[in-house]
Length: 198
Image (cartoon, rainbow, N blue to C red):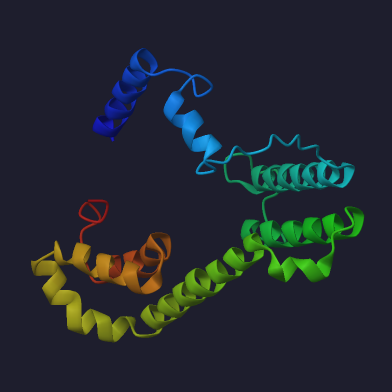
């Protein structure tokens, strides 16, 4: 990264010293007249009232979630035995916010499945969450067999855990899901906690 940044800075300085503005550059002007280069029209984007409302609703939802998480935290402890856990509150509030945004902001619901953000979000749900939960369920239900097969080997060669984590992260599509699924298993196998972060 440092070499890339340095190369960009050097290139910018050289271009600034030796080059000329595009409006005065003969090569660029020639390419422009030949139609090889097209200038993008400047468009002024103005946010609609509905877009502003949706952002406000989203911010209110975040404030509610952060406030609730703070109130049930162990350090603050104003709510000692919460009815709903933090993760469930995040899902419930965000789903409620999505419903309110859809109703108030006049979102065309039929267009949502065709939006790029929806497609990428759903692919993330299927690829990451589904496969991660599957992997976690597999490890949790076969922990005894995993202990028997890998316990002695990992105790002798703890560095093999890095190889296992690398291969599992390719299968589960998520480093976080791999950590959630395999770190408890590694601790149960007797791998030293000092080795795990490294």
